[in-house]
Length: 558
Image (tube, rainbow, N blue to C red):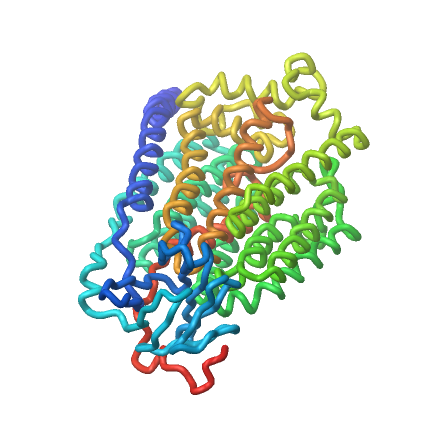
């Protein structure tokens, strides 16, 4: 027994140093995959000016106007800043005049409704004439496309070693009281990762590798804090991956997405209203539905629906009707959350609404207006709801209330300090004795047992998601993908900030989870599904339409 203890001690000492290095290495490898210099997009068509200048069309949605942020910029005073939008669907190319002053003509005829284009048509934007043509082989060659993505195999090997080392550390900790769920779940996780990446031919899976890393940390937390929840948590991972794959397939077809978003939006609002009537109250918030055999948190899945239904294609962004519907939909989602007293989740939804609203309009006045309403609403809540006000009373004074309302934050800060950079080892922490250690305080839990370096790597994964979304947004096939990806990444970052800073008394404690790490089936599955929006923004265009596509029926009006 003494020899085993000595071996375990030496092993844990080595693992405490090695695992943070592997985590940093994985982050760097995935960052290289996600943030590499991307090749120019493949041209789908082109406009040819009268002087022969070619203006390539590289996206399925193209904004045309005088503004420098337009995809095709026409620096002529007579051209409106947002003059027209060119879109492609299964039937061909469609041109819409977006209430420009100078108008749009096709073959000399002004258009007032969305109109299909044929290759060879002459188009004029406020008198600036050009011809719409197919993309040529030379256009494709000039695009510098076809660069092969870095292989995911090195990153997958690093992740696998990280998982094996951590799992063995936990197995040694449990020794004679080994829960069977631990090796079973990690074996299942390894098998799932390699099968998924193999199906994807080990290409373009940087987002997924980071997600698998966060899931791994989440299973480490569950194994230490609540071993009995391992099977449930792993089942949630499988459900989340299935939702991710299904949603990724749907998002490949923008037309299908647009058709489904009204149905999804209605279901989301209906689920929240149902929660108001039959929900259970936990931790002061009525945000759970007990189905007997399982308990779910509807607001987590509504996050996915909110992004799915709240974003729009470029063509639809230009309509007042769509904008009004978005505002009403946002209110229908956030309002019930306030009634449930789930203010942390409401804040996350509000952040998503701000991101979507700004990317829809680019208008800071709109953002300032919504922010003002939020501040006023928060003031009313603090004034009339003592439960919330007590949290603000503790804010920045946690040590003064260390034995009462500040107990969770002070214990978390002590845990982070005791763990240091490399942690005390899996299962050796003490924060699990504090309520919500594996959910609301999970950053402190990870810091104590696995070290601050690994905890910061978890935050680094979410930062990489955001950088990837922003980097790909300008090249997205559709405005829908750009807005959805930035909204999902922004909500992830904001939620993580509330979790980290709330548990360390840098912000009021709101009781929200850390995405993909905190213990909880609903949170795990829904957050995995949200990754589909981030993954979709990096999809390349499918090239020019096949033979016969783009040739339009005699009736040009769409």
